[in-house]
Picture 1 (cartoon, rainbow, N blue to C red):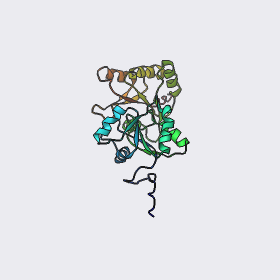
Picture 2 (cartoon, one colour):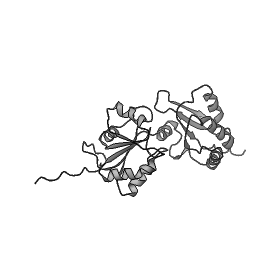
Picture 3 (cartoon, rainbow, N blue to C red):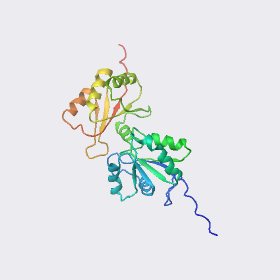
Picture 4 (cartoon, one colour):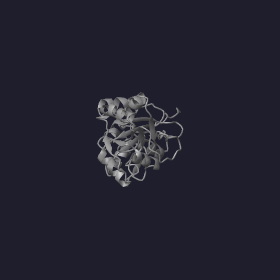
Length: 252
């Protein structure tokens, strides 16, 4: 009597395999702009998964079409991620391998994915990460002012003005760079808030449209940055790095 086929084994570090994916949740990093910035492993996972959990299926379709991937998608975004938990667990228990992607970058970093990963892990089911591009790490690398001091990632500040200003004041004396994500609609507001709450001489580094055709970086005081954006595009997504306050000048 022939042996029954063995169940697919979970991915092992460094392995390159054509075997079916083991059941579980796969957190897949996708390009933050340039569609060439996708790993071979990410493409294999997306092609081999039973389903792809996508933040926006229309957006992800562009990446999949570029690489001839026809894996069916399921919508999974911040407004329905909690409601999807039982479905995700049920599918994995039934033997499915689910790839989770966001519109850009790494799931769970100011994007959906963390809640699903927590639920799957709490249920004792496997969660695997497929690292990829991330606006956070790309901007930190471009900034060049982090070195060994590390940095603090804040993500998006609160939409409410009072809460934003309060948080900036709390962070004023932090001794390492602080990274924020900001939208085109609030970037000038953030510059005003930094100037008013932290002083006109506080320096920032801003990266816009990372990896895209019109990628742009600039550093300076809020006033210099406002002057720049008076004549340059405000379109796109921004990563803002607030640099530490300069040490006080020694007394004479």
